[in-house]
Image (cartoon, rainbow, N blue to C red; front, top):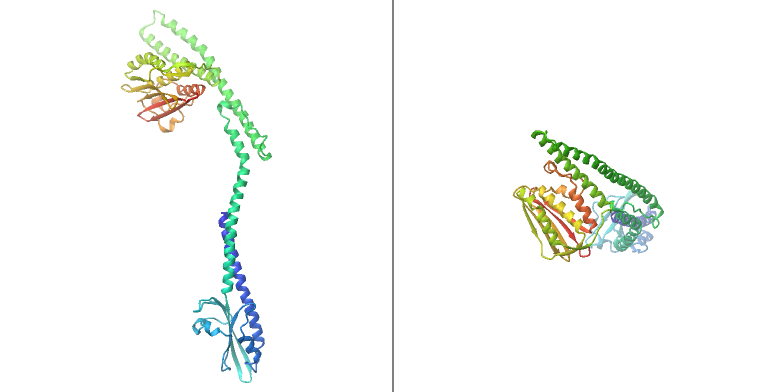
Length: 446
């Protein structure tokens, strides 16, 4: 927009400059015409002074070609070169009292003015025609010089303004970048951090203080939400334990018939699911609050995978799902074995839960670019693309097809939290109806 406005300004200035140059030509022509008309004698149109004024080529301040025609003269008074420049056809169509632009065969551009007046003497009225032509070549050269300089100045100005704008914008945005950097350091795990405004301009102090007040409220709400979840989980464990004892007592009753026993066992199953959910909520709360200790020791990854294979193989066989393990022998990695074991347990149980009979679940471990990659792949029902980014959030389940199965959507949330404790990265790739693969990657320095 700035460049467009500058171009418009140059065009306007060029038009104004050309108008001024042409205006000067018109002014000179009016002055010469005034001198000539004042010298027109009624009784002697061919006087020497008038003839000298017209026939002598005056070059100061402008070169003008003049021709005087009179019905009572047997000859034409004109400036030398007038006839060479103009032919009769060049001057046709020019109205009296009007300026016009003429380009004769010589190629030069002329501004032409035609003046007609009537004089009266003893012989009656006499018509006098005066034609004046100003050569615009000098003006065009001056205009071209001005326009070239204007374009050059414009180009230099655009470059300088661009550099100045870049410097000013960079300088003006630097405090905002600092503020953005301060804000980027704050995450759910670092809500205690605040935006420092000591090095910010005074204008941004209010914004930084507002952000800090907002962070205070968010942190309070977040802590209250976590505390509420933890307290509720703790409070629920007591009633669950008491109900479980009551169920055991009912099942020990010899007078309980078969139908009643089946219903009590179904209640016990649901109660076990509820107890499992409470345990997971408490475990997740401990992990997020840093209560879970991290004990880094060398771990036999191949041994851990084969142990999990032996533990879960009966469950896979019962559901008619194939369970495979792939790892190199003697694979060692320094990590917390208990936390890594819990990560793999959650992934295995999740894969088994959503893989139908006849499917396959693969548990693999391999070294990759100096790191370690653990993956659990299944041929289950998969996850839609829009839900993949949300599966690591708490209590997230995609639809009725998934939520109809037991579980509360905490398995992958626990996996993500424990992976952070171990400084590992978790990624997921899934195709709806084709299966899911979850990868846990440990870097070379983790």
